[in-house]
Image 1: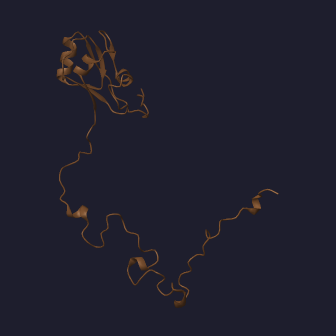
Image 2 (image 1 turned 180 degrees about the horizontal axis):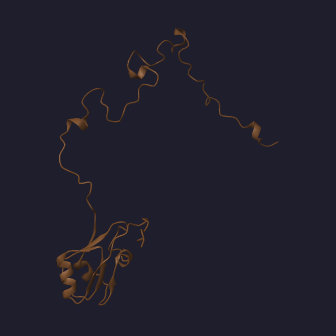
Image 3 (image 1 turned 60 degrees about the horizontal axis):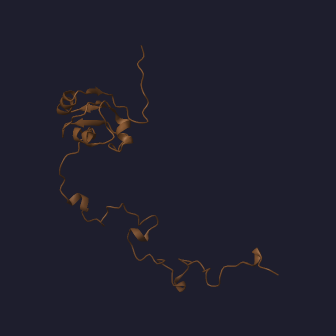
Amino acid sequence: MGLRVEDIRKPKGVKRNVKRKGRGIGSGRGKTSGRGHKGAKSRSGGGTYNPGFEGGQMPLIRRLPKRGFTNKWRREWDIVNIGTLQKTDSINDGAVIDKEFLLANRILRKKNLPFKVLGKGNLEKSLTVKADAFSDSAKEQIEKAGGKVEVVKFVRQGAKKIEDKA
């Protein structure tokens, strides 16, 4: 005769009786039922405060001075310097540099941001660069090296393209 499903039981001492509160003074948990006297935590539905609540004391977030300004219309850019394009071994003369190329070569990391080419460094390679924006110095250096500059309109990934109705 082997072990059967109906023979399986919880080990002795695992199952405990539920604490029955509010069942008279003699029970040891009568009257206030372990909640103490008065206050929010003694009442039904009480005892939950918002995380910043400090018992009526002026909360820390309101005691500290407020400084600075956050521009809600700030536009964030992913940037690439001319010097980075010069140093990268996978970029040769006459190459076309666009967002997909830079993401594939891990020069850019963020797909959902527009990218701007800045003029820090020197460029001696003749490149065609397609970007969302260029600094004046970057544009000047690319054209001076014999390359081309193309401004591409940024479309956020996942956004629906709006076609002109003629």
